[in-house]
Image 1 (tube, rainbow, N blue to C red):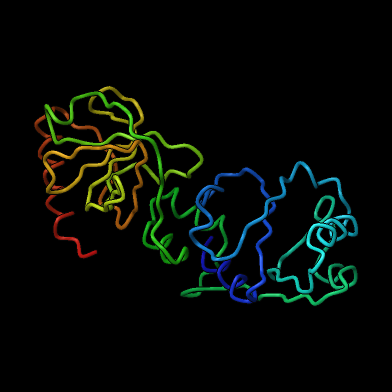
Image 2 (cartoon, rainbow, N blue to C red):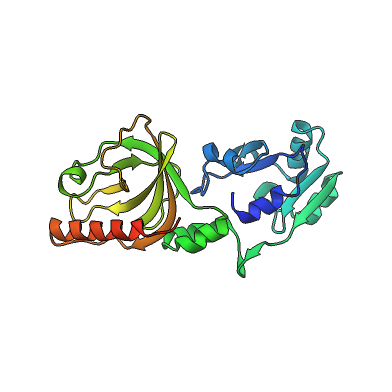
Length: 255
C-alpha cells in the first residue's frame, strides 16, 4: 500500500472499492493490515482461483460481483486474464464502463513499485523504502520468550515472532514499539545472534523503561533509521558496550 497505490485510490469516489489479486508473494502490507492505509473496502481474489479465466471471463466476474460497476482505475502496466495476455486496450474493449489509467508514479525520479521497495528493505536502505512507501515500514508479531540473556547480561528486550511480513536486512534499527496501544521509542535488533546462540531473533529494547508490564501478546515495531550491520563480538563486554552506544545514538534521534 505504497505511494503509487495511493494514486490509484485517489481516483475513487465515495462508492469506490479496491480489488486485490492475491499472489502470496512476500508482502509489504499483509492482508490483515491493509485496511489501515485506505478508507475503501478491499476485496480479494486468490490468483489460483482466477488465473484460468480469460479476459472476458474476468470482467464478467467483476460485473457479476459488482453489478453497479461503472469505472475501473488501473495502473499504466495493468495486465489481466489467463497468463496476463490482456492489456489496457483489451480492457477498454471488453468493459462497457470507463477506464481510468494512472501513469507511472515517481518520487525523486524513482519509479515506485512493490518489488523496488522490497529490494530496498532487503539491502537495508530504510530511508528510500520509507520514502517510497509514504509511511514508515512496520512489522507486527507475537511476544515470545527470549533466551534470557538480555536483562541479565545486557538490556531487557521484548522478543517477537513474525509471520507474513518481509523482514528488513539484519542489523540494528531506531524504531518505535507499540505495546498495549502505547508507542515507545526503541532500538530493535533483527538477525542471527552471532555472539550468543546463533539463532535468528527479533528483539526490541524500550528506551527509558526499565520495567514494562506487557499485557497483550501483539507487538508492533515501526522502523525509522538503520544504525548498523549485525556483527559478531569477541566477548559479552564488547557487545554490551556496543549496545550502550546504539542506545545512546537512538536517544538523540529526532522522530
